[in-house]
Picture 1 (cartoon, rainbow, N blue to C red):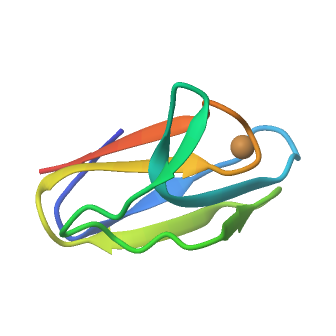
Picture 2: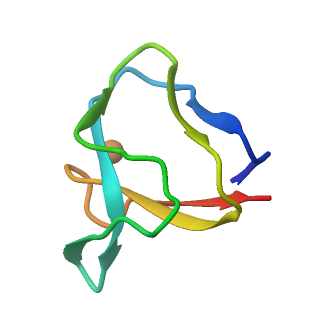
Length: 80
Ligand SMILES: [Cu+2]
């Protein structure tokens, strides 16, 4: 997903299910928490049925977010 520098990432759930987001990635089936330099902090952000925002992302770069309850659910955020 692309985000303009200084903006927030909006996550709009399409079905009512729980996601819990953190900085990092699923890699080969393992959770690898990691916060890149310049990333917006994502710490146990719960998404259920309403739109949430993460950020703002103030530094250009590529950042990774994963869902701790759904194996291999990764999100890449590109800020420019
Ligand atoms: Cu999820």
